[in-house]
Length: 351
Length: 192
Image 1 (tube, rainbow over the protein chains, first blue to last red):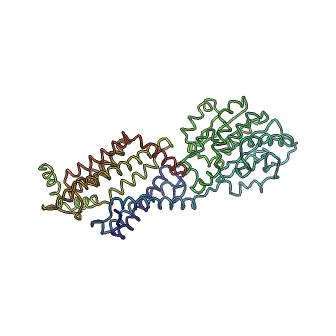
Image 2: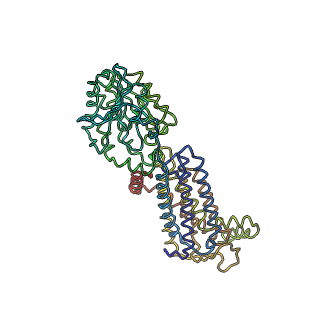
Image 3: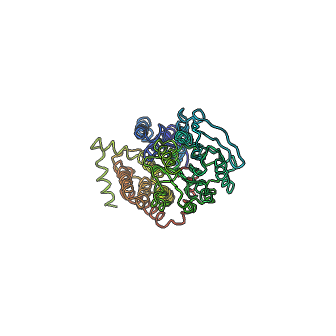
């Protein structure tokens, strides 16, 4: 059944399958904005992906038929073709994921404008319940509103742009340094924000009536749940919180947000779904009473597709607590100038 | 048999009359072009869909098409074990534009492959399925045009592939756990 009587034909067919599958993957990357499958760049360069796909597919067929005279002689059996096609598919996929992982790196939060540590006064804060960095705007002698930032755990994105724009707008900002390596477990995680609020409230430069929380991703879920029980939190803004354990299993959609290597790193925190289930942020949203709450998502979110957001948050949409931003992705939110403006304006109005 | 031979002559006698048609037939008749093209469409279909629900539907269609193809091929091999039909070029004059296969002419292997995939996809997505049917029909016709199959071989192969796909799609609920497993593993690997 497996004789591979013509090694030249077998090798040529492997190359045909490899390059045409590579082309199909580029077509898929362009069609669905999957940056994790794109060899030539992010979604804005979709035209290059389509062009590359066409060149690979047409070029591979043309080369194969021009260079393989064995096509018109007894050659490979169907089972042999299937095995070669499968092997080539595996290699093409592995090659694509590896090259895309090397070439795709998000630059958000790494520019000189976002180096909050260099631009603003700051100090490390370490308490029993949390560790973080406090950023202070220019001292005017009056008590200011403060915002605690719970960054994303993805590791693929920095919250520095948000911290920088908030400090620039005159807020005192406490950025929490947290993560799975710091024992991120329920119910211990619920101790973070009460600890932060207590710390900020006792500072002379903070107006204890004007303390807000901004959470990114899982940080948003923690912020909503903590605010439900801590009345001192005056306002909550959550950027793309998961809200439901089912939303922590994005499947292929995650490659719209990050490269495969970053996705593997993202998945290394295995307790994410369990933690979201324990936090039950959807149940907590109703317990915030009249305190301001805003949920922000992008309509290009690869982890929580727009249909899921609409289905999960019908009530929040009706109450005007959801802002859906066209053209924004899940991990891109903290870098978007539109989102930065939205955040600072919202906290100015609500704190 | 008479109609079969008459149809064969009708189509095969066109070979050698038009260089363009001959070239097209030679492109379509081999085992590499159309089978690879159909497989590439299946690869694209695996990733197709705006959200996870739509993607899962497409992925199930791809898995059913592969299973249908596999089952049809097993039945075809069994047919070949019990019945051997010589190729048209054995014992009569034909316009032969391809090499001389030595295996049984009945049922046609390319038609079985093409129509099993086409039927499985058509039962899931009419538009894409129609494209597959066109490709499968061209595959079968080119085999007659080039003198390596009788029309009845192609029809039998098409029926075998179509029936296999119909049974897998409509009666293959017992396959669901295996497909669930494949999709679950794919999702864990961020590939489904």
